[in-house]
Image (cartoon, rainbow, N blue to C red; front, side, top):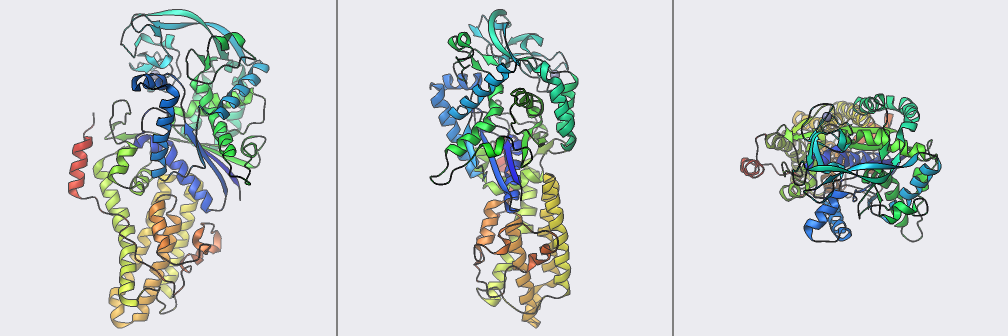
Length: 577
Ligand SMILES: [Zn+2]
């Protein structure tokens, strides 16, 4: 048993997220967390809303709410969707928490003490038309590296390079579109990342080989260009205040830390929130997950590729510069983009399917399975309604759902409400057992390696193996000539259903619970965990004994009809933009 710390990139507070956001961080992290728990490991899975920064301030203004109130409501709305999506966070926190404020300020003090922070006069872009300083991301222009003409002042989302607003060619205000911009002077804190480049390089060299190429190549590309000193404060109302004991003047001017400085620290902050929320008599130690635990905790981060530089270079630089033994990431699981008909899902342009709307159409399991089976791992992948419907209908409704329903219904009709006995297992069951053991080993190996598409393939192959066995044995014919043979077939098939309940749980937890509830097994029955290794896998078909009472659950997965498909394509738009 190992201790696994799992985080998924923090969703920004504004707006409900789309399916692309879900598959790029939170959902795979949840599948992995559920899998590790099933294997008997100790898991802490934390996430939070990323609440600071200008977009939150502007959205609150637009909604006519104080920003704290706006964020509290928006956090509640996101959390409700994630609960309905079955995301099994141990804690879903808020980067505006007192715990994160304290940790962020403490790390800033340590960085200052160690000579990695410097106060500098900076010239900042002021928009005369808008009558305000423009935060970096509200200046748009042409990327000097790749020529993309909608690059933001903080980052080019086309080539992922981090930018300074003054790098942009032909800059203009994203609010008004005005190019009447001027530069004025103010003072800000800078994190001297240039002094940490070698250390971060050494750290990436020691760990990056274990990461997927997508993550390690982005980190190395960044380091090749050398780390730039970065401003880590902003002139905003809403954020972690610069601590007055160290920087009294800046604190008096109301400077707050830049959202990208405090957001990753919220992984620690959320763990402190989790510890502070411990039930009476069950104390939780957040330091046992974060502090001086390099050898005992394995830390896996999930994120989309645009977040990789911050997680593999900037956040490690912050932690290294603190000179404290903070836990740093062991494995970075990064994702490409899920596209909508080959184009971008876009929160701001309301293009694609949003997580709350998705759940109005169908329960979470349909989306969870489809998204993970088509996760954008080695390349971008595209959502289309036709593909979604064909995967749901074939894999979930036909291969899994129909198997469960016809086995249990037929057995009840012929043999009553208990698992039938019949003949002892024979050669076909032996063969099936070997096949299942092989597929289980494959499934576990792919999940251990965080290859979600291949794990989903192995899961689907397990479901298919049941159908092939049933077709081969044809209990509806056997029952006419040898009822004991039919009973054996059905008993074996029911054992498969119980197996499916266990192995499918990380992907489709609701259907898994329904399958498991079909059998009146004691709560601690062996198949409750997935902790089978080696020869134990051979027992996978011997966990539901004859005589066990069962019920027939409602249909697990309804088919998507042509009418549904037509209506959804019409409603959400099918063609690429
Ligand atoms: Zn670019």
